[in-house]
Picture 1 (cartoon, rainbow, N blue to C red):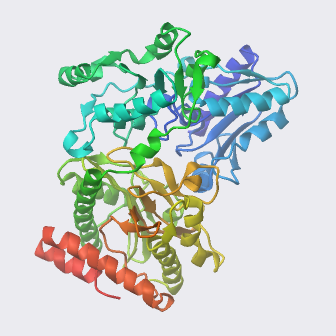
Picture 2: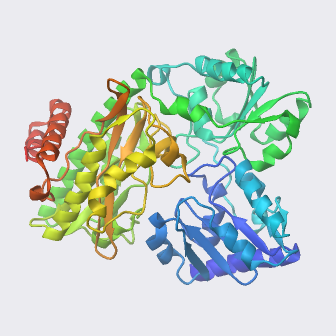
Amino acid sequence: MSDVIKNRIQSLRIDMQKNKIDAVIIPSGDPHQSEYIADHWAVREWLSGFTGSAGTLIILADYAALWTDPRYFIQADIELSGSGITLHKQKVPHAPEHLPWLVKQLTPGKQVGLDSRLFSIQQLEQISALLSTHRLTLLPQYNPFDNLWANRPALPPLEIFEHDIHFSSISRESKMGLLRAKMISLDADYLVLSTLDDIAWILNLRGNDIPYNPLFYAYLLLGKENCFLFVNEKKISPKTKESLSKENITILPYETLMESIAHLGSDVTFIVHPESLNAAIYKIIPPKRCLMHPNWIMELKAVKSENEITHIQKAMLKDGIALIRAFRWLESEIENEHTISEFDFAEKCAFYRSQQADYKGESFNAIVGYKSNGAIIHYHPHSEKAAIIKKGGLLLVDSGGQYLDGTTDITRTIFIGNNPPLLIKQHFTLVLKGFIALASAQFPSGTVGMQLDTLARTHLWKQGLNYAHGTGHGVGFFLSVHEGPQGFATNPTTSRGTTALKPGMVTTNEPGVYIEGEYGIRIENILLCKDLENGFLTFEDLTLFPISQQLIDSSLLNQDEKEWLNNYHRLVWNGLSPFISDDEKVWLQQQCSPI
């Protein structure tokens, strides 16, 4: 594979030389600033061989470099080996550390190429300003990959479908009404939207264009009285098309958004979201007719309705039942000395979820890491390379499902066999203490994710330990498993660190510890933010599945922590036991016994 990557980079360098370009910046995303993307847009992965979801590639005439955050350091070291690409380890996740480095490599007059469709307005303005300061020229329409990438995958043609009002609870007419009220208050004529989960949420539509995310490629142009959906019309059934038409939503070809904006005239005012709308679209809007405004739709989407919360609880119930069956299956297979790989267990988790009602697929590619593979934070087993799960090691399992009822994301770490080493138990218990501290937190309204993140780390810090990822992210309602704006993060470079938690938001709680070359530990539940009295907030655990007590050093837990764990396991038992078989009840009762 390394020779293939080298040949691809060499082909790009030949094209760069032909076009007098000295450096190319290649991000991870698509024209919609998506975290997860269709294969068509996976240029950075195709060119570098690095499969992580976050990373920026820079190609110079004699040097190639990739920047990624600590979640992917081990993975990138492996995947970039022999490719000629140097890994630059980001010190601050999401910070554009590649840009100061780049300008130091180039002398005045040099030219930097990129595809402005893949950069937000904010990102391109930052790049342009820095290059200009150093007397470097930006060429924002450089896209040689349609020619260089033979057999490049086409955009998916998969059907778009309605997310029934039974689940979504709020009609698209009502949602568009909320947005139009905001537009009127800002004296704007149109709202330009490119974020795929926002479009899906507003229209109560879902799709299958992106793996694990029920989204579809489209743009939305919302007017005060009309609405235009730019999408491949072949993906919409006659029934859905008729339903949209009745609500004055006109379907236009996906690639005609810019043409349509230009035809609306110079006296029309557009709201754009500078953090998400791509710079190529922004360029065609007259500056005086462009109103930049932060994306307020994210928060509308993040605060779940009572009906959505009720459905999410149903999804958690289904997920818990499926995982009981998957983990019991694994125990039986190991006890009977059958050969079971990480990949086999990931498949089995998906299988048991698929037996539940309204299941639509996995919410992400399952992370199943045995022993040292568990220390690779976003490790994914492959059928031909997966480790065999045997007695005597830790197994980290991070998986989730997409149901019409909601989106799930859960991590459990278990020990295969008996008598886990004391150090492993100590590490697990330190992670558990942080997990409990965050889950049981009470905090004043206005508290942001960066403040709460510390609660999950304090016990690890006291022992000189830490983990190189945020503690949590928002979760969509049958949408993206990673949803903004809220979360728990260590720094203000992302909205997860700076957004205040509000009642109705659902957010993961997932501290961990990773010992490279040995094992990884993570515990993850989804939390619902709820009101308390006197302006304070707290959390309610939505996830229903036991936490391994075999790995707990109970001497490290105080009485309040033991009481929390017993209460949680009582919640799990009460929630799941009415819906499982007698044999499954015996297993669950053992797992949920008081500590």
